[in-house]
Length: 228
Image (cartoon, rainbow, N blue to C red):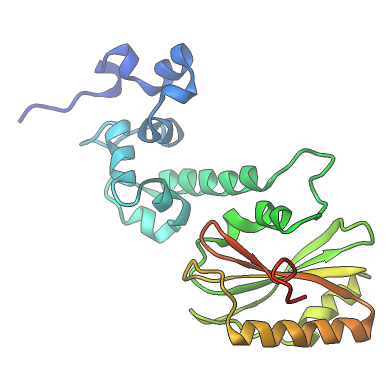
C-alpha cells in the first residue's frame, strides 16, 4: 500500500502554514485552520486529514461541543491535541463574548446579554441558571452560576439568587438560563419562577430587569415580551 504524503511532501500551497502566510487566513478551509492549531498528524494521516476527520460529524459544531473524553476517543487525537482543541473552544467563546473595552461589561439590552453569554450557554446539555449582578450603571459586577438542573429544568430558590446579589450590593439583576432543546420559549414553570423572583427582589430593593432564556442562537426576553 502506498504511503500517505507527509506535510513536508505536500506541495507548498497545500500546506496550511504556508498557504495562510501567502494568501491570508480567509482562504483556508475549516480543516486547514484546525490543522494549524493541532500542528501534527498521526502515523497514518497528515494533520489536514486528521482535522477533516474531526470535522466529519457536524463540522465546527462538534468542535464547540466536544469534551476531553470525546476527543481522545478519536484515533489520532491524544491528550495534547485534545487540550489544544479545548483551548481553541474556550478562546472562541471568549472572542464571541467580548466587546470593545468601553462597553465590555455594560448591559443595555437583551442583545448585550446574548453577546455576553450565548456562545457559553447555547450548547449546554443541562439547564444552567445564571445571575448577572449589576451596579447602578448596569455594569456587570459578577456573573454567578446559581444552579444546574436536570435535562429539562433547573430548580431555583430565591434565597440562592438574592444572597449573591446582596453580597455584592447589587442595584439590579438579570436572570439568565438556557433551554437545551434550543427553543427559548418559556415554560409555565419559567413564568411562575420569574414572577416569584421579581416579588422577592422588590422586597429587598433589588430590581429584576429581565429574564433571558437562551436557545440555540436565539433568545427570549421577558421584558421585551411584556412579562416584566
